[in-house]
Amino acid sequence: MIKLDKVSKKFGNGGIALSEVTLSIDRGEFVFFVGRTGSGKTTLFRLLIREFFPSEGSIIVGDFDLGNLPNYKIPHLRRKVGVVFQNLKLLSDRTIFENIVLPLEVSGFKDRDAHKRTEEIMQELGLSEHRDKFPIQLSGGELQRAAIARALVLSPEILLADEPTGNLDPKTGEEILDLLMDINKKGTTVIMATHNDVMVNKFAKRVISLEKGKIIKDQKKGKYEIS
Image (spheres, rainbow, N blue to C red):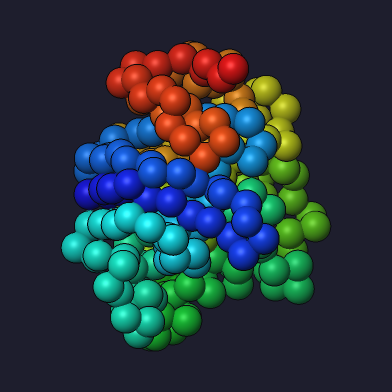
């Protein structure tokens, strides 16, 4: 499903975000990426959607070899990989429905099909009553659900979630993580970057620990452990 082989990412200012990262993630896995700010978690996500290009090494995501992927195929990759961004990236001047339907519209779905799929995912994530509200009218947990719904509306095989519980109270954070676990149980591969040690330790999933751009630990049923 996902394979990185000796992947490094260096920036023009001389900074090294990732250094010789090698890992593989199977279809249907739930994986936590943990590490301090600047350890390389977000850079890894950006590499997986070809927002960044690796300085060295190879990246395979499903049937896509990202090193040889022509630009016109990047939208095809991003239909397979949904992303919940740390800052959510919901459009403040659009309703929740309009935010969630947007990826379908951009992908060329017919209006009737796009609206039907959007209604389905909103119902599934408990957002139907917020259909015509704007982001500013929703709570933190509701905003996260909206961002997750937008990431799932194209039925991706992989979901990347960057700190989805970071700004939430513990109860709401647990609800969001339960939701991600349910999504994973339905077959979607979920990769979550987080600082939430309580949640990581509670669910005992695979934990990949990063430090200064390197993998320092990879445990199948791991704990939140950073130096």
